[in-house]
Image (cartoon, rainbow, N blue to C red; front, side, top):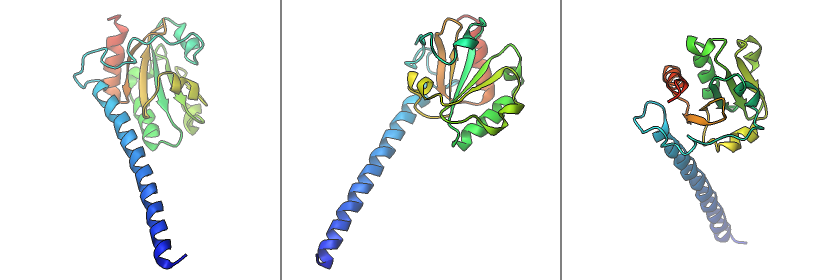
Length: 176
């Protein structure tokens, strides 16, 4: 193979790799842009998110906490996600989310954060929760869902400021 032929083959390989990378980027952008309009406080109408109104099956990892009769805040995270760790810390600084009667379930794709031992009793971490992530088709992390005791998703979206999350939790807890 001559030098020119080698250069042409290498150029085609580079084009193929760039095309694959571009396809992945477009896919991620589409997933994020699909989720962004449904964020809390974005001005969209309730129910605009296709997950709102979804009734989870009874055998999800959330079921033990749904039996308490209160809304459960489910936070979907990934152990390799630095923004997920920062978001969990910000949520733990929010007094409303630290109340013992407010269950917060962290669903991790891998292991739980290392500081889980210092979490309050109302915060629970479920490891290897790929099934729960796939169940609601989590587009990106950190992601949240508020689930009523009857397993109905009342709000969901990309994680927002903890204060907005509390406002949504309070609104959804009112039975509306």
